[in-house]
Length: 155
Image 1: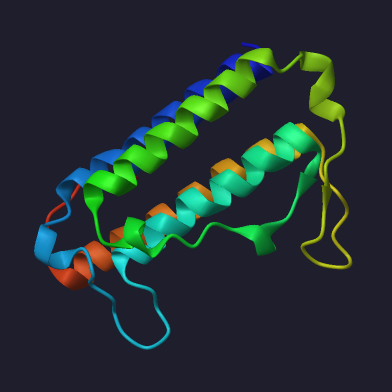
Image 2: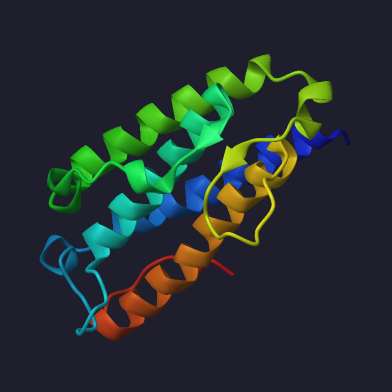
């Protein structure tokens, strides 16, 4: 199987799990946080989308800048708005991905994350974006357990 086909299938499956999780959150648990500096469920989910948007800008422009993340707090308060945001991002990603030429996978993207971390290629950045979503799925699963509501199992 070629890289593009496999990656896209992995992305759609992973994002689909996140969306199924969102559907299962009881309205009264959307602002649940285990406390301290841990952002509530809505904030965790908004963050997932905001990081994806940074990657999308990077794929489109050649520069990823996480300091420019969207911080629209209204997304943290509405499952409906959050799902619309994810859908908009996913449509944008799919449109860009369809135009991606296989030879561009090795093109380097400029980013400033850590001083000693080299700039990634597009193929590496795609997997960083996917891994970020999977990382947060683990956090979401823990929140659901702590909040005491039934949801899908990610793994």
